[in-house]
Length: 168
Image (tube, rainbow, N blue to C red; front, side, top):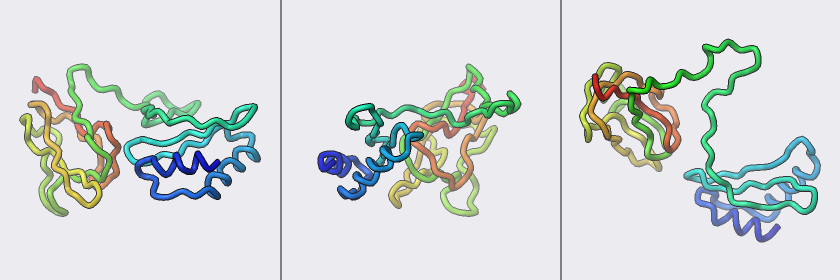
């Protein structure tokens, strides 16, 4: 248990975890048979997964696995599933975790919108991370065909922000 507490303290984004917290998680696994594992994530997708085994619990470093954005419920209409990007569109993805903003300040005009022509190196949005405003630049030249994020919403590393038609 103490080794796990020390391991968790070394995960970026987990400020402090005490032995009693780890013991509480282990007890939860023992007492709740419906729980097969517990995942603790820090910043940048790093973390630890505690998995139930028939013998002693094992602790393994977490591997970042992208999760689907929408899970379709049984009986839900097929059109509720996420639309696949057209093969000709390129994606501009978030290079960091933070809060996405479409304009340099509240009430200002958006950097880009659907139909805007962008060039490589042009600022397309801002992501606030740790109180620092980071200008995100287009990596390709083309026309914005889809804005995939709402203003002032949290974004993850690698999340699609825009879909761009390089031939538009």
